[in-house]
Image (cartoon, rainbow, N blue to C red; front, side):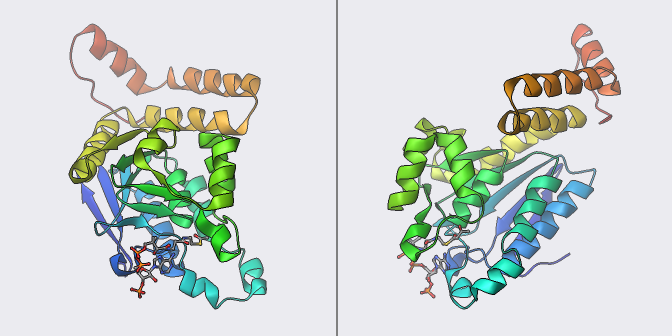
Length: 260
Ligand code: CAA
């Protein structure tokens, strides 16, 4: 499938998805979100693909937000009736069970920050800048920012960022647990692709299971989360990859995964 606003490339078992509207700082219009939803569904459906990386084209931005020009022409009733943002973003989050990484190479503002926070984790370049500046436009986050940012960095910082619209640099983002790691700008894509390749080399079903249980920590009480963890762990012990992984350890060799 060819796209207008994104590019998709498969490098061995890793899918690289690149937002490709550099002149508009990769602003997320409905076409981008529709194509992203399709690309993530294709990634999820392709059993040869075991990890994905999402990044922005150009040197300046991951994505500078939802497309303000498009939104400026829409009526409130349309936002409401179309359940704006939900048809795309909920699909990506709920249906992508396999792991994916956001490689943030510059501005990640508004919907751009929110999209990055939908990833399983973020690797940021030294140039990355995160923010929820929607308040300056007379609105507020609409793709999960008020919830995911608060869960990631805590109330005080999230509230300050939403109320002032200020940007947070990469170093502060790492210190605040918004990103997993910060790397030199020129090394970002290689670093993210290598990390994705490392994840793709793991037993695939165990990767999905690890993702599912860490995500459960955001949705449940500790007691329920611990039950979910134990049940998933117990299910994995019945997998062929568990038998192979433990045998490979004992026999001092690399495991060969079946993904089941
Ligand atoms: N939507 C549409 N176009 C955008 C855009 C956006 N979010 N962000 C940047 N652009 C466009 C600019 O209009 C400009 O286009 P033209 O050349 O045609 O004028 C081009 O990208 C380059 O941008 P700038 O000239 O502004 O670049 P800069 O380096 O001077 O500034 C910036 C960079 C600080 C990121 C600035 O572009 C900016 O503030 N962008 C808007 C950020 C924002 O408010 N994001 C939140 C959007 S609302 C949202 O996301 C809602 C939600 O919760 C989902």
